[in-house]
Amino acid sequence: MPLKGQITEDMKSAMKAGEKDRLKVVRLILAAIKQIEVDTREELDDMAILAVLTKMVKQRRDSIEQFEKGDRADLVAIERAEIEVLDTYLPEQLSAEELAVMVDEVIQAAGAESIRDMGKVMGQIKARASGRADMGAVSATVKERLNAL
Image (cartoon, rainbow, N blue to C red; front, side, top):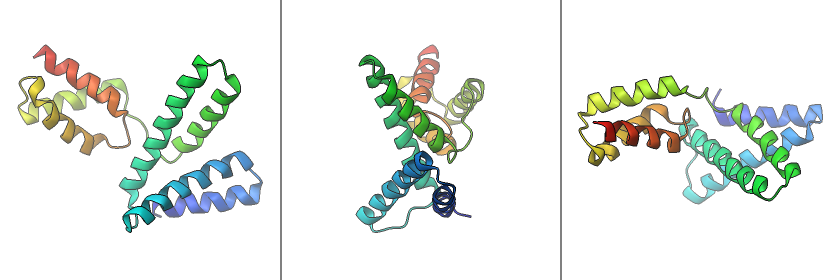
């Protein structure tokens, strides 16, 4: 079943089960997907939906950071609960070791020799790790590895 269909089914089951918090997040996901589909006039595939979900998680992590600075534990809890629901649709995240191995493989395959090759390396990693790794962390790892060459 396509990811969008699964999310729609989860919305129905959350409605039947009376899970108001989960239903709210699932509706937000569907609204974000629908908005992009209307804007682009194309139906999103699973990879594009994963990109939307990843963006939503990143937004919530940024919000958590801001709420923690403002001592708003109540809002932090809400954002964390939303991330838990969003994570159910994302593939399992790569561990730091798996990410390091992937970065090293791509650097070798691309023949990268310095930081100037970062764009080439990042492009290949983005294709391999899309939705399974925080691209900010990936960028930092690539930069560190390339500077060590």
